[in-house]
Amino acid sequence: MRDRDGIALAGLSVSMPSVRYDPPTLQSLVTALDTTAHALEKDLAEQQ
Image 1 (tube, rainbow, N blue to C red):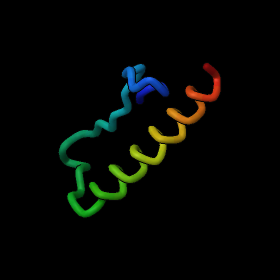
Image 2: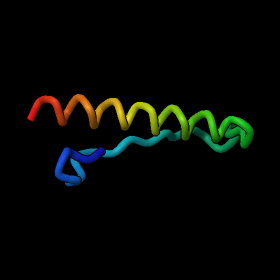
Image 3: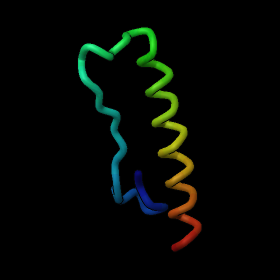
Image 4: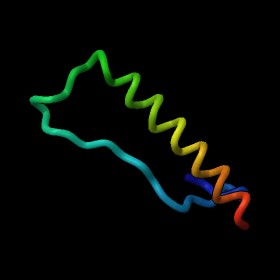
């Protein structure tokens, strides 16, 4: 995540055992992380 000046403040990740990894669900995980990161960036920018 970055603040309104583009400075990195935090990061998000997903981890799981490889036996539970299902390649078809990768895009939905990436989409969920991206959506969450943008929402957090917006919240942080509004607080500064």
